[in-house]
Amino acid sequence: MANFESVIQQLKLERDQAQKRLEQLDQALEALDGLSGFDRSGSRGRGLLSRRRTMSAAARRRIAAAQRARWAKWRASKRGKKR
Image (cartoon, rainbow, N blue to C red; front, top):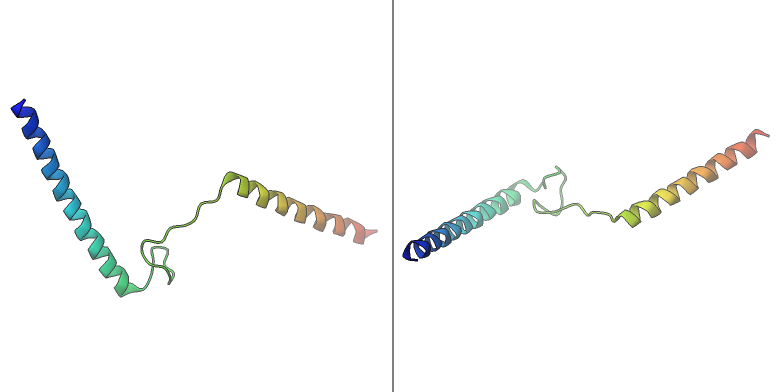
């Protein structure tokens, strides 16, 4: 059991070191982001940690249906003008 406990202690130590390293990297990224003024996409704005919003499948279906309706309306208006 003593061997098992020492393995657990070692893993906890490594976890703590990795966490400290991640905090250092986050600080470095924040410092660099503040200097550049650009986010990852290359545009000025919300900063390095900004993320794109995801759209639900239902929202994509509604948008697609609305676009198909606009196309159908446009095609119908084109058919009416030819006569």
